[in-house]
Image (cartoon, rainbow, N blue to C red):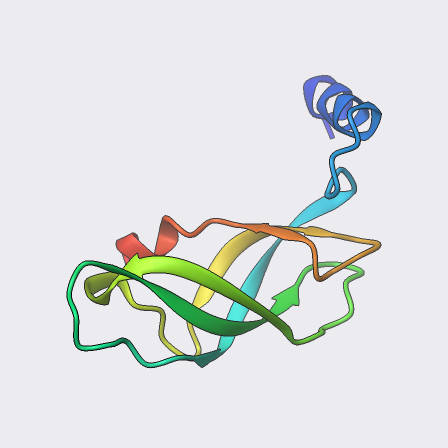
Length: 100
């Protein structure tokens, strides 16, 4: 870990960031709701399982708002930062859905 990354983590802890202890990892999509017939943005209910060093694989339910064009697929893998103490807390890179 370089000095800037270390200082950033310390600042996050001081400011009470709920994922200040996060590590880089991925999440696998294991369940996805069906899109409605309407077009445009809509909520998608998904279940994911985090994968990162030292993280227990737990199933987590969450929601993302996206278009039918970028609808998540079961088995998809997305990059994420995952809390080491509370793996249900994570910052998922949802923009990766648009990149396929």
